[in-house]
Amino acid sequence: MPIRSLLSCAPGFFLLFAIYHFPEFFFVFWIMALFKTGFIVAAFFLARAQGWTGLGGYGLSLKDKWLRQLLVGLLLGLTFFILSFYLSVLLGYESIVSSITITTFVGQVPMLLLMTAVPSVAEDILTRGYLYAHLVKYMKPTYWVLLSALVYVLNHIWRLGDGAAVLSYLLLLGLVLAYAVIITKSLWLAFGIHWGANIAYESTRSLFSTTSASSDASTWILAGCWGLLLVLLILWGFYRNRLKSGIALAPDLY
Image 1 (cartoon, rainbow, N blue to C red):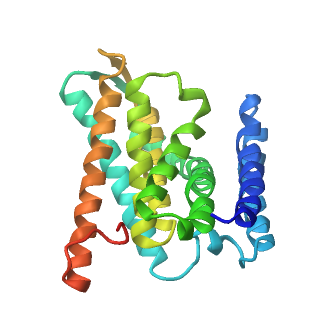
Image 2 (cartoon, rainbow, N blue to C red):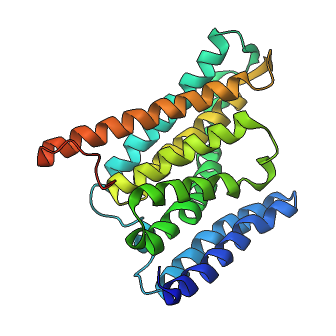
């Protein structure tokens, strides 16, 4: 990567990184809401300053089947997180001890959607969209996927000491989301998966009170579900590429 391009990329990344993490030093809702929303505004103007027309430069262009990619991603994120939750229950690692009524939960849905959408898209821009815009043309896609996944793991500053299970699930989810960017050349599928997973996480927490029989078994199951999704996405990439070219190579990875 040319030094000039690196000097252009690095300050912007660290600016966004600082805005993203600043509210985590304060346990105040309005500060968190202000800075997460402000992150998106800052990213928009930063993209403009760097020569793009807006967030489309970071993979959020409103074209090229963006809505379909978002909806497919939402379905995948919801499905695989819920799969991990119920597998944990069925295998006895989690027990549901109480639940709220559906009516009560439905009343929480609008706020739940909003409060998961903004942090999800902010982190997607920071750990995927920004890196894709600046680095993918200088790196082999395989290396870019690994770099993005590593940045995603390291971005979870407060969870880095939570053990191998947490790091594994973060790494596998990071690989899923980075690969989704590579195969679509867009952030929408990755954002959908990320947002869907966060919706499912907050929904299960709101709907059910649970007790755990193991400190990390459920997290390992979640990691396994993300690993399964990664394999399925890679297989889909092989299949799609064969349909297009007849060559059995994963898209854009070689």
